[in-house]
Amino acid sequence: MNDTTGDAERLAAVQRYHILDTPPDGAFDRITAIAARLFQVPIALVTVVDHDRIWFKSRHGLAIEQIDREPGLCASAILQSEVYTIADALQDPRTLTNSLVRGEFGLRFYAAAP
Image (cartoon, rainbow, N blue to C red):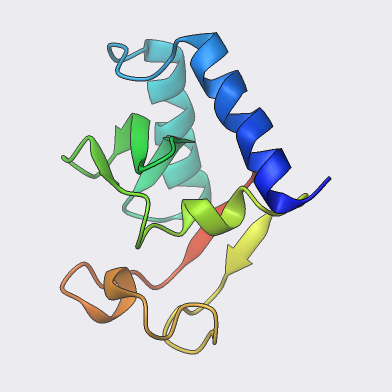
């Protein structure tokens, strides 16, 4: 299966679950709060990658509800089969030019599981 086929199947599953744009959910909110505390980070998210955006089902430490699929790092994480980790985004060649890293957001650490 190539990346295009895999993404089409993943997007079909996203639509099938009818989760996009649903109200906050206490279970997901507990997950993000625990993740932020466990990893000692100011922001933790449960995200769903749609065809053109990354929607935040739950967010801890961030007020916005979604971002465009580009420049989001989640679009790269969903292509992996294992945990995708960037210890220092300023030093990692995958993220050196990303606007979330270089811009005012200042992303430094990133970890995601598809």
